[in-house]
Amino acid sequence: MTGGASAWLRPLIDELDGPSRDFCSYLADLLDELELPALDTARCRARAMDGGHEITLAHRNGDTVEIAVMDEIVVSYGVEHEHFARDDTDLGRVWPFHEDGHIAQALEFVGYLMTGRIELHVWRRPLAIKTRSFWIADDGRPELFLRGSTIGPFFGWSSEPEIYRFDFTV
Image (cartoon, rainbow, N blue to C red; front, top):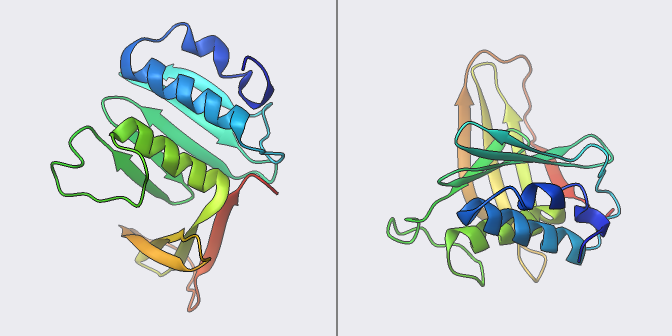
């Protein structure tokens, strides 16, 4: 496909080589394949950065998913992020993905984000932000896959988490 949801990304692909080209080409195909009426293509960006490329996928509601493609792929969503690297399997990381390899797994993760299959729970504390990320399984049940926290002075306190779903299908 040459147009559709990925038209803004296609010009960059010809300038790339190696894993960056593979990732961006497959991402463009994924964007064209998924039905993403909330993808704001006017605000989506792909730009070169030191050592790689940065891609911004923008939702019409203002949310964004940021992807840094370097030696590893870093997908940032809300206040959380996840790394995908060539040696993930050597480190014992196990993902609930159908594909092998860090590029394919990062793309599947992005697909999960874009279609609302990942929930981010955020608790705000005066000295930290705590996060929990969940896959939404085929049966609709959330499964924890990542715990995180950021230390720093923050304002606010939440006893219940704020729940975010980055669903570009609605």
